[in-house]
Amino acid sequence: MIATRLGSSRRLAWALVPLMAFVLAGCSTAGGVAASWPSVSAGADRVYVAYGPAVYAVDLEGDEVWRYPKEAVRDLAFYAAPAVSEDGMVYAGAYTGHLFALDAETGDLEWEFPTADGADGTADGRIVGSPTIAGDVLLVPTDGGTLFFLDRLSGETLRTFEADGQLWSAPRIEDGTAYLASLAHTVYAIDVSSAEQVWSTNLGFAIADSPTLEAGTVLAGILGDSLVALQARDGREVWRAPSQGWLWGSPAVVEGQAIFGDVFGNVYALNLADGRLLWQQTPGEAVTSSPVVADGRVVFGFDSGKLVAYDLETRSVDWDETAAGAILSDPVVAGSSVIVAVTSKEALLQAFDAATGDPMWNYLPASGG
Amino acid sequence: MIDAIWNNLILNPMVNILLLIYQYLFHNFGLAIILLTALIRLITMPLTLRQQRSMEKMQEMQRSKKWKDIEKKFKGDKPKIQQEQMKLYREMGVSPFGGCLPLLLQFPIIIGLYQSITRALATVPMQLLELSKHMYPFIPAALLPLNNRFLWWDLSQPERLVSPEILGFGIPVLTILVVATSFLQTRMTTPPSADSQGAQMSKMMSLYMPFLFGFFAYSYAAGLALYFVTTNVMTIAQYAALGKVNWRQVLSLRGAS
Image (cartoon, rainbow over all chains, first blue to last red; front, side):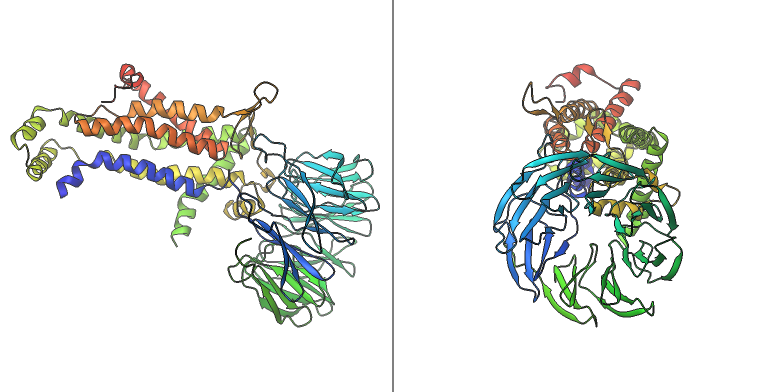
């Protein structure tokens, strides 16, 4: 037996080569559709969550109203939170290079726009950031750096804007100007009616989330230990406040304070006017999303699954709860609840009472979608 | 636990070396892959040479008169043949594992290199978040995102040379290079076998492996295909430099047998 084993060493070596190839294949996700996190948006009486192969509409009691597509479609993957219009439309962008306009009531497809024009049909038009509604125009950022301006009713391309790098976040709109952050370190102001650039400012670091607009100021968290404030009219840097870790989310602005968290587990509140630190908490768990303001509280989701509400008056923890899994995307406020999308086998959405933090309901899609 | 050991000992150093090379090599990820692959080939060269020598010794032994005498003398008695062959291994100072142990030791390095390329490319938020957890503090965050263009390739995507006006479809140039270089490399590094079963296996491998790696190159990020081509070319160059290449055997389909 020993002799057989020893005598076959060369065969063993050869057998290990395909084994290694198998291991390599298991390690790689870069070329295929890679995993990401679920993202949720709030409408008037329901929320819309995009994750994996579908978009789900869920009412405020945690019951599924519809899903799109109804039957699973191979290779379809949604990463970005859908945009919800007041006139009853939901716009969902897929990583595989499609923008779907859905009827918010029924989930029926109204129109579809292919954002991909790469060699394999996906290269340039992958959608990671959410679309944004600006009146009758829909702005769709893509991984290839193109910002599409589409007619919201027909899906027709009105114009495009080419950024200098990947666009992973939704543009923010104010007074006919779109403020857009690129992963290639730049914040742009773009005129929505013409798609012409008004100004651009290089912040020196990648920007993963949308800028926050408040009182003529554009706030951008960078993957480089700072929150940067720019003047909205010309892009001039007003202040840059240090943080200990990267900022994946944008700040929530309330009562003249810009409140945000970093990946090293710090929560900061800065004076919006000059970037001065007003208060800081150290929950010690990474923040990869933007906080939301609900009823005198600012609520943070942490990648540990913790959900913490800070009282804006006392600047201390009002309540904290633990969700079923990591909270990697922005929580939303819907009705009297704070809803988070989680990466867990127990739930896709979880609702908590905004005032007390008490768990209200969980939603997990039945398989088949 | 295993994850932590793997990350701290293999993956994190490789990811950070790759980023460091990228930082100083014109922010060119293609060149960074080529240089890191070359460095690793150099570091593991003693292992490769040992494996090569061991395989040659084994081949030599299998072609020896003593080996053939054993087969003739104990024909039909497999256990006895194996017992005697074991004795011969010991007598001639050849380790039957000498060929595969160095190969085994290289596996973690090869897999780590492969993973570090996919991790550094970070094409979606989850991957970028993961990358941020593995970066050493002295690597400047301003490096990110990496410029993943090299020649006409997007190293984060499967590569195709597209000329819709001429052909209307993409030509997988890197895949073709991977298949060609894997074929040459496999033919060079597979010594001719003394027994017919071994020869058959060698022949199968020299056809099967290039297509297997070609499949990976076709399906996954071009950065990985670039790694395959670089490591294959380096192996070929190494063999050629050592004068170990029997071109007649390499270019003949029957040569391996």
